Image (cartoon, rainbow, N blue to C red; front, side, top):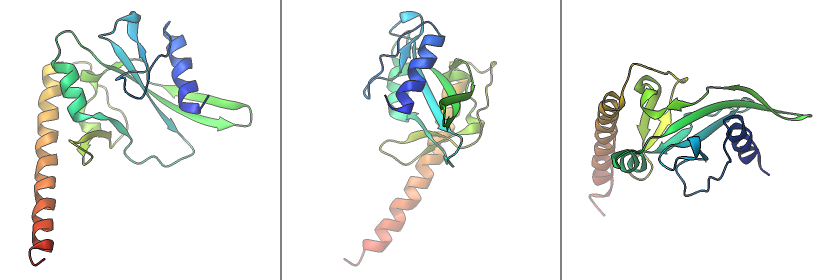
Length: 161
């Protein structure tokens, strides 16, 4: 079992669930065995410099949240690998996606845009889904402006071909 899978299994067990996630699923396990409440485990090896880890495809998140009743949760895990094996140093506990502040998120170029964590996790328990989506709209507008600049640069580079 690889480290990521081992972490998912441990965290699922901690929350009374079974890790059944696949590469195509939106979560690694279900909260209260509810298919509308997946939990996605994001792990960071503290021995590595993990710059802006990917959280989720922005388009995938929008499509998921637009379906009535769907929710999404995350657990952020810091771990080390020691001679004794995998050591979970810290986990955030279950965090609803809408409680993650856009102060620590960004949308970057991959496909339709991928949400990345650009700063340490910041949880805002007062932020509701509407506030989260408003922050996402702002982040997408920034992303689109950056992408438009890139397109203009590419047009200029290839204009004489």
